[in-house]
Image (cartoon, rainbow, N blue to C red; front, side, top):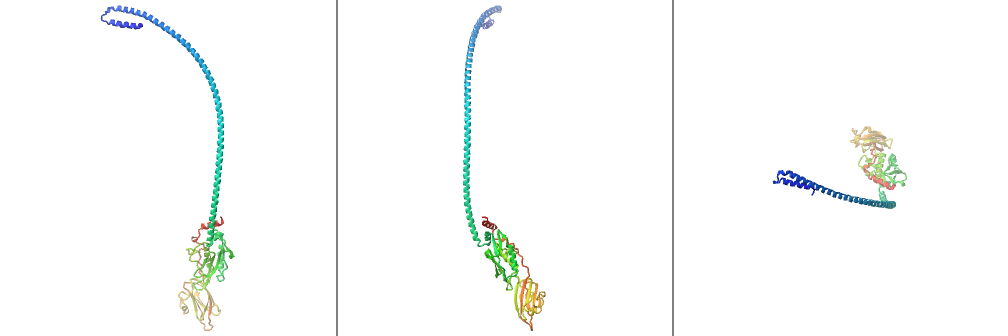
Length: 457
C-alpha cells in the first residue's frame, strides 16, 4: 500500500473518529499529533518504499535498457544482416535484373526478329494476297472478257439470227409487195423508183389543140417526184410502165378510165346535137390529169372544184356542132341550140351563087313565126339574110334555136347545101389541179417504208 493510500485511510479514520459522538473535542491536538506521527511514519515508509520502488524501477529500467541495447545491437546485427541480405538480394536482384534485362533484350531482339520475320511474312502475305488478288482480278477479268465474248458471240449469233429472220421477213414482205405491185402502179414505182409513161400521137380526128395541151401536161409531169417515185415521159412504148390509149368515143358520158398500166382517154362524145364532136384541148388536159391522179393513187374527191371530183371533168367541145345540111328550095331547116351564153355560129353555102337566110330564134320563136314576120321571134343582131357565108357571135339564153331558110325561087331556085358549125364560147371551167390528199388511198408512211425496203436495205 502506498503512502497516499495510508493517508487516505487515516483521513477516513479521523473522519470516523471526529464524527464519533463519544470522542471529545478537546482531544484535537492529540489527534493532530498522532496523525502527524502516523503521517511521518508513513512518509518514511513511503519514502523507503518509493526509493525501493525507484531502485526496482531503475533496475528494471537498466535491465530494459540493457535489453533494449541488446535488442538494439541485435537489431543492428539484424539490420546489418538485413542490409547484407538486402545487398545480397539487391545484388541478386540486380543480377536477376541484369539477367532479366539481358533476357528482355534477348526477348526484344527475338521480338524484333520475330517482328521482322512477321513483317517479312506479312509483306510476303501481302504480296501473296496482292498477287492472288491480281490473279483473281485477272482471272475475273478473263472470265468477264470470256463472258463478254461469249455474250457478244451470243448477241452476234442472235443478231445474225435476227438479221436472217429480218431478212427473211423482208424478203417475204418484198415478195408480198411485188405481188401487190401487179395491181398497183404506184407500188411498182416505189419498187423501181420510177413510172415511165408513154403518150402516142394524138389521132387526126381529135381537136387540133389537144396535142399542145397534152404535151404541156406531160412536160409538167416529166421529172415529177411523188413519194420517191419519179415520173418520166418516154417515147418508146417498150420502156413504158404506163401507156396512154386514145378512144374516140366511150359513150355513156364516160371520158376516161385507168387499168393497171393503161390509161384510156376519150377524145370526144356524141353531144346533145346527136353527132360525135371532139373535146377541146383544155378538156383533154383535165381528163388526162384526172386519170394520172388515179394512176398515182388517188380516188375520187367530193370537191366539185377539184380535178379528182367524182362527177368527172366538165367537158367542152372544140366544135359543138359541125355538119352539112341539105335544104330544098323553098324550105327551112331549124335546130335547138344546146346550152346558153356566147356562141359562135358559122354557116357556109356550097353554092356561091345561091344565098340563104340565117336566124337565131328566141326560146319562144318558131320558123313559121319568123317567116310570118311575127315580132320577138328571133334576134336581129345575130341574124342575116341572103348570104352565102355568114359568121356571128351571139349571147343566147337557154332554149334558143337556129334556123336556115332557102327562099323559094321560081327561076334559078336550087336545093341548098350548107355547112353549119356551132362553137360554145363559154370559158372552160378552171379546176384545182392539186390532187385532193383527203382521198389519197395510200398511207405515206407505208410508201416510205416500201421505198426504203427496196432502195436502202
